[in-house]
Length: 102
Image (cartoon, rainbow, N blue to C red; front, side, top):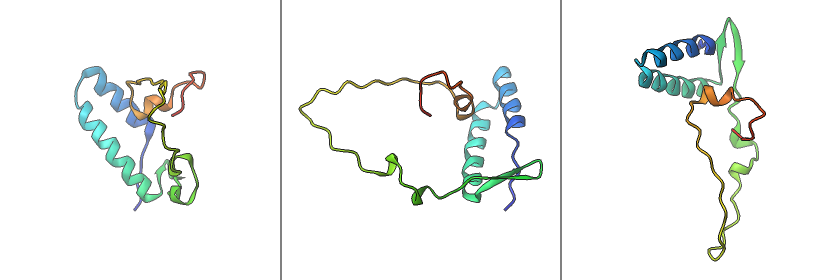
């Protein structure tokens, strides 16, 4: 399946919808569904260039696939957290100077 996707054009459409406060939920749903299709397809085309998205996460070892050590229920853990009110495109564009991992 050939999927064409232009992230710059989509972002313009989304920003316009946000400004006018129309169709924002529908556009978020659309980008989520399109992202799933793109990953399942292994990539997408933009300007006749195929952008490859490797779909081999299960083959790579990552901290996300290793079981963590069990927590000690008698220990008081200090947890730091932050909330980011942004979608995936906005988060991806944050400058690297902000100390966060995405």
